[in-house]
Each structure stands twice: as structure tokens, then as C-alpha cells.
Amino acid sequence: MTSDLAPREPMSASVPVLLLRSVVRTHGSGELAVHALEGVDLEVNAGELVAIMGPSGSGKTTLLGLAGGLDSPTSGDVAVCGQSLTTRSPNQLAALRRRSIGYVFQQLNLIPSLSALENVMLPRELDGVATRQARAEGRAALAEVGLGGQADRFPDELSGGQQQRVAIVRALIGQRRLILADEPTGALDSQTGEEVLRLLRARCDAGAAGLLVTHDARHAGWADRVIFLRDGRIVDRTEPIASAESLLEASGS
Ligand SMILES: Nc1ncnc2c1ncn2[C@@H]1O[C@H](COP(=O)(O)OP(=O)(O)OP(=O)(O)O)[C@@H](O)[C@H]1O
Image (cartoon, rainbow, N blue to C red; front, side, top):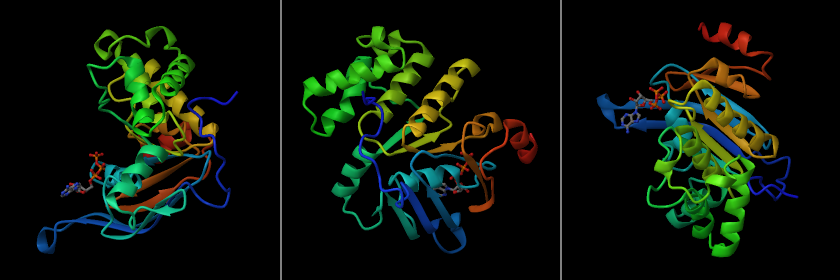
């Protein structure tokens, strides 16, 4: 049986899920210009989880925002599933974001007046899926992460870790091909944080592409490779990671 969280339509192996070409993002102009990204090239393929590391202000969040179509590059191109985000109308972009991209941020943004199930169903209903089907998908997806018994609880009736899992399920439900995670373990304890990373890893193993911003080399150890940003440029990349220990050495932690 196909997982309700897993992408269902196989992508052509030759098209990266995420492609950034010569991406520049400058805030402001003249003397006040801030060069957040200065010519970034990146490809993330189906099945891959890529971690982004770098000091504060190096451009990690900017990169994630551009990858998700939440922000536009000053120059260069960003494409998701072969479709350029920079040439789409606002409506087309909103539809692509809803259907193809899942966002997992530190801020969970669960809607407090909706149950866990209703929170999870919401993106499917916005996609035009019938309520009955969205409900069935939502229940199955929550059960998959061990929250089958909590479906009708409201966010404030769930623990922090459970809330984070609901947020992740909501980010992954449907046919999301690209998962963008910005420090998704936030303030979670290490065991719950690890659970979140395991879910992310599992989704990528099931065929999604993932981009994970993290300051923690142990978290980056879940990724297939790591890119290091400094002053808006990629300054280093690892090939498939040998061990978390080698990363700790590389980041000087
Ligand atoms: N809206 C904005 N206006 C002006 N400058 C901005 C804006 N957004 C980001 N910047 C600047 O762009 C640079 C990159 O910021 P970004 O948030 O991407 O870094 P980061 O690596 O995610 O940092 P952190 O690890 O602290 O979250 C920083 O110098 C930041 O001050």
C-alpha cells in the first residue's frame, strides 16, 4: 500500500526536484545593500536529504525561502520539479507551493482551534480534495507517526513533540516532492528531535527531496550531503557523509 505521506508520482530521474542556478539575493540597494546570497548553484534530487550549515547571517534561511518560492531571487533561477518559480504568476506559484512543497519550521503554526486531524487535512482540502478523502488520508498519516489516538485532540492538548509531529505530517501530506526544514527540531528534547529527523529521513527515502537547515552537526549527520554557506556563498560541500563525527570535526564543534 502506498503511504499517505509518500510522493506517489515518480519523477523523471533526470529532473532534479530542486534546482538553483546562479542565484543572487540582494536586499536593499546602494551602500545599504545586503548581499544575502551571491551566486548559489544547487541541485537536490528525489530521495536526497541535503543539510545546509553555516554561521549566523550566512544566508541559510534566505536560501530556504527562495527554494520554497516564499521569496524571489534578484537574479538567477529557481526551479522545482522542472518548473521555474521565477516565471510563474502569483496564483500558479501558490498552487505549486501548496501541492509540491512542504515546509517544516521551528514555529509550528498549527491552528489552535482545529484538531490535529483538521490541521493535517487542511492542505489537502485547499488542494480541492473531498473532505471525506482528506479525512481518511489525514487519519492514516497521523497513524503512521504514532498519533492515531490523538487525531481529535487540539494542539494545546498535545505535548511539544506530538505537536511537532502533527506539523510534520501536515507538511508532508499529499504529493509533496520537496521538503524544506528550518531547524525543525527547535527546542525539542533530543529524543523527540531525533524522531522528527527520522521522519524527515524516511520521507526522503520514500522519494521526496529534502533541504534541512541546521546548526547541529549531529542533525546534519542524517543528510546525504552537507553544503556549507559563508557570506552568501557555498564554500564547501561534503559528498555522502561517512559519519557524524567527521562532520563535527569539519565544523570545528
Ligand atoms: N529582509 C531583509 N532585509 C535586509 N537584510 C536581510 C533580510 N533578510 C535577511 N537579510 C540579511 O541577509 C543575510 C542572510 O540572512 P539569513 O537569515 O539568510 O541568514 P542565516 O544564515 O539564516 O542566519 P541565522 O543562522 O542567524 O538564522 C544577513 O546579513 C541578514 O541580515
